Amino acid sequence: MRIGVAGVGRIGTMHATNLAALDRVDEVLLFDPVPGRAAQASADLSGTKAVDDLDTLLGNVDGVLLATPTNTHPEMLRAAIAKGVPTLCEKPIASDLAEMTALVEDVEKSGVEVLVGFQRRFDPAIYELNRRIRAGEVGDIYLVRAVGNDANPPDFSYLPASGGIFRDLLIHDLDCVPWLVGEPVVEVYASGSVLVHQAFADADDVDNAVVMLKFAGGAHATLAGGRHDPVGYDHRIEVLGSKDSLVAGVDPRTPLNSLEPGGHVAGPDAYPGFPERFHRAYVNEMNLFTQVIKGEVANPSPARESLISLRLAEACERSRRTGAPVKIEGN
Image 1 (cartoon, rainbow, N blue to C red):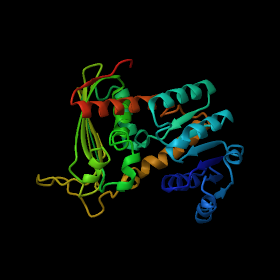
Image 2 (image 1 turned 135 degrees about the vertical axis):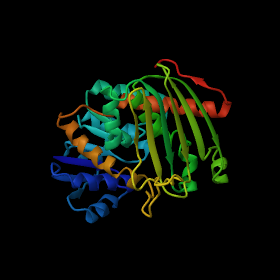
Image 3 (image 1 turned 60 degrees about the vertical axis):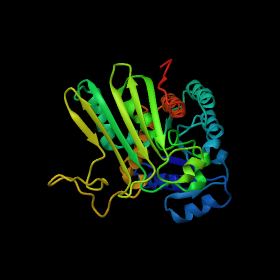
């Protein structure tokens, strides 16, 4: 099997490394719009080969991963499906809801498998959490709590183009939590503050936010996200149901200190960032991508479902600005 990777920045190089390590992948072809960048990445990574253009890449692979800037995703994704190449595209597949909706329709008309790179769906513990919910082992869901904190703020120059905390940091939970609950969200309330640095206010953004989701069946979810955690990168999801209470994201590297005797204490190797926290998820994502290409498993992150998180993120932003809940219609 030959897999292509378009875009060899930090994320693309990580994916290429994980793909090259899979036994079933014979070669990884690399392309980047920046001249010379793919050749340099290939020189540093065994099992890879650089190509000069996207057409050459798409004409010589069984599947392709798109890790280029967001504004290039629609054109590249349409080129991939036109050639019938199964694709894993980093989120978001488009920058706004109207453009994404049109793109999803094109994807579905093509019949080509397209996965969206929401890595939490591929995290083994979260994947198992979803399996247990679907199997009825949790019972009726009462409440979901999700926490997502960066260890350190992103580069401030990134903020004006980030889309804001709901489209950037919390978009993953806005995808993952409805996927876990398995019901439409009918109402959103969000609030945020600037507590970390004035740069967030200057970018018309916030650096700490909370979200409440109400689901059609009456269950609620609370999501909390922040741009600075002095202990380390933290992401946890708790599900409380009528039969069980489960959590994903608590292990010896979780940056959390308990004051109870014998309680959890953060060690010296607390997670520094999302690549480390979700390493198993990223490896599993590449493995499952190859399985989707071979027709061995169903697509775990289809393009249409990525519309849900963006719609919710936009509702969160409206709620934060108005201070009022936002009803979600048409789910």
